[in-house]
Image: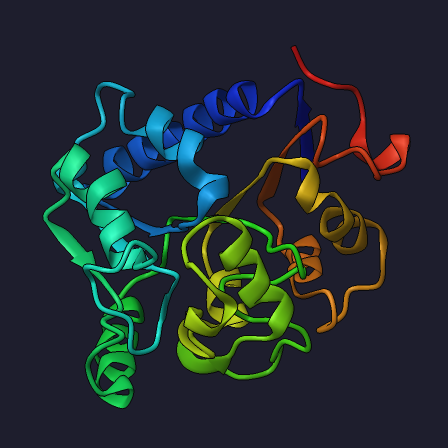
Length: 252
């Protein structure tokens, strides 16, 4: 894993977006199209804002897959990740080929449909975050590191649900769904390249556990350390609990 630390989340976003754009452009140049996985949540705001403003990306040649979505949540709800991706990525770029997880339909049907699509070709690049509880997508601890399914229904633990409340997506903990549709850990790791965008001090304990502790289902994002082409983008705050030899120097 290549760990990169920046002074703040804005410098982080600029650098991560530049690498993401290069990966997309290279895939299009090589094969005529690019397949990406997009993450959501407050941690991705600045990154997606920067990425969608980079010129010379032929977004009509990009196929996008969705990491996770709440079960039973309407697309009109402020917390809907389908709504998030439409507003912050799809509508801004003109992506025409995308696969959103519809949490309002029968989950077995949705998972079967999206799984069939994602298995057609390799994923060029996956954008991910790390949850406050260390989750990868919505795979909360203890995460399933073994399933070969592409997507599954998962139970959300209280720490995950409290993060969603704390980010302002819901008015009360009771409103936060208890289940979600999620890409599996093994499916994320099948991407040729992974960019993890993880700003903010509230992520520091999870970052430290995932980068310095045991690779374990109890720290789901620790599995990223086994991937040959992963870069984790941190800011000064999210890297604050890392040992110097792991964090390295803060980049300009």
